[in-house]
Image (cartoon, rainbow, N blue to C red; front, side):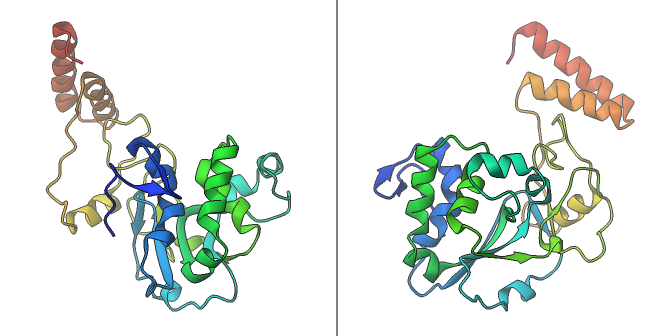
Length: 239
């Protein structure tokens, strides 16, 4: 569905556009019509490699949602303890959520999560809030539906359905400090409606970062051109 970020309200309260992204997952079930009973949410930094039929055909048995375990945060017992979750309780990653919309609405989960976010300064914001609100009432999906990517991936990993380019490791920002070159991502991008989209640097800093990344990847001639472009922009005072 389409959301006008200039006018969206949550629980009757207006939100600034820059705040809205924090609430996408929380808002979604409330925005859907009564005819929708289940919904699949996926982060924009995910790459779907295989059909999601197995999830789509799954039936809820009283759970609020289905998600994959966040192996990184789950191992940090101190984080779970700090936010009020038992150290031995599983903690999910909110990048992919299959939500039981009917139960979500009945249990007023959006309002409860919003209240948590307003009252507490949580490190992982909505993900922490959702783990608190579900209070263990969720079903674990396999790691294949939320495989974290922190290194360059060029071939499709066997058995993986969804790749998740977590944190700052993204394959689409070639000037990024943690930019990941990925033939696999490029292959899927070429099949998409955005195949012709180019990632041109928007400011002087991005020109410099792209130059460094290009040099690191061995394209010395192109990197030299970018360094010259950076120097000209810097000397002329362009931002």
